[in-house]
Amino acid sequence: MRSDSISIRPGVAGVVVNDEGNILLHKRRVEHAWAPPSGAVNPGEDVRGALKRELREEACLEVEIDRFVGLYSDPAFQVVDDPSGDSIHFVTSLFACRVSDGRLEGSDEGLDWGWYEPEGLPDPLLPYAERWLTDTLAGHARPVVR
Image (cartoon, rainbow, N blue to C red; front, side, top):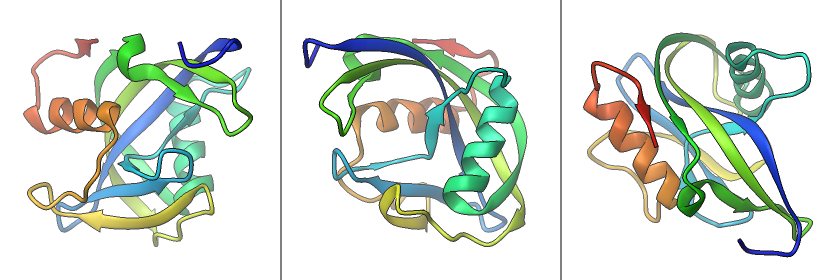
C-alpha cells in the first residue's frame, strides 16, 4: 500500500467507443497518464447508474452500456493515490459502452481528453488502463475477474 491511510471503495469504469470506433481516454491529473473514465459509486447508486452519471459529469456524454467486461480488485492495479495523499483500493466494475448522445467536453478531472483509435492509444497508459483496454478489446465471452 502507498500510504498509512487506505480505504476500499466500489468503482465503475467505461471503455467508451464513438461511432467511428475510437476509444475515449483522459490524462489523469494525479498520475499524468492515460486511462478510460472511471469513478466511485455513491451511496444509493447501482453500478450502471454510477457509470452513466460519471460519464455525464466528466465528459458530457450519454452512453448505452453494451456489456459487462469484468470486476477488478487486484491491489497491484487497483490501489490509487488520492490527491489528499491517501490511497484508495477500488473494486471496479468495468463496462463496454457506446456514445448515445452528447459531444465530448472533458471536465477538469482530466488534463486532456480525446478519442483514440484502438491501434493508436497514447503513452503512457496507466497499468490498470492497459488491463481494462486489453480485456475489453479481447471481447471475452464471459466477464473476467481480476
